Amino acid sequence: VELSLEHLRLRCGGIGMAAQGEVGVEEAKRWLKKAPHKDIVSLGTWVDPPSCVLAAVQAALTYLCDNDTSWENCAGSLRQGRGFTRELLEFQHLRITRKNLEKMMAFDLSTHRVLSQG
Image 1 (tube, rainbow, N blue to C red):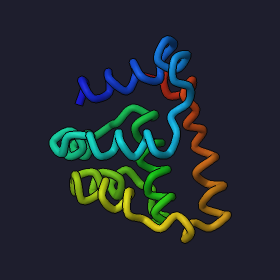
Image 2: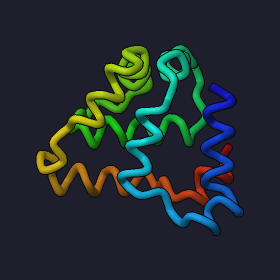
Image 3: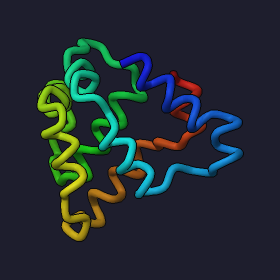
Image 4: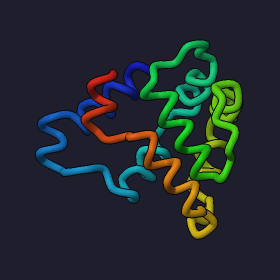
């Protein structure tokens, strides 16, 4: 898990961000596809996740129109590993409601905020 998070920090940190800009939807999908199953499952075993991890998974569940964003539900989704990432990749984004979009934005997952918490 630490290696995957370190790669993400490098990509989103100073030089990586300056060279490539913000992570777009297609790049985010590539990151999801490359995430090792064991790393995703391992995140689901954390009892007290860092707030940047918790917020990212809560936003993902909100994207999937799942309004139960408790850590127990987040962890259960993560323990599905590739099944969870596949659900995210295949989800029909036109199903997202304005209310859920506003909820996702409220998680404030800006690159600066996530990196400052990591």
